[in-house]
Length: 174
Image 1: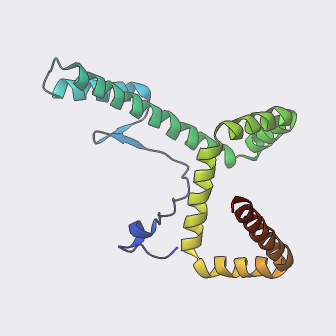
Image 2: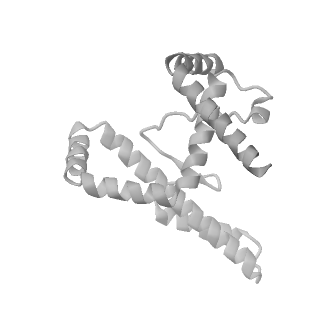
């Protein structure tokens, strides 16, 4: 992808994500948090530093922030663990063996998940295709031309069938 330009937002381009690193550091209120206890301490310090208020919405907002930070911490730890396991061939072999033993269960779960989240999944795929196209438009245009060259007859037949159906529908209304 090319360098960021001021027009990227207008075109809907997003920066590529950096590859996952093997170490993770979560910073809350300017302090590095290594575990949930440190996160709770940070939240208590934040609450002690803040002006005490009886506003339940402010307290709820603080609790929501702490919960979101805990979730981010758990996610970061899981990502770091996965990256460590990826570097360990024994752990990856164990994961692969589990997958092979539970393949049908995994596939059934994936089918159910895809059926439940079809619209969201489609939106993600469309967004990915848009980013990929804008990253290398000429490559994508060439692939499209190659596809058309390979499947010209079928594409023209489908277009003709669509035109005939539209013409028949229009004649039926008249």
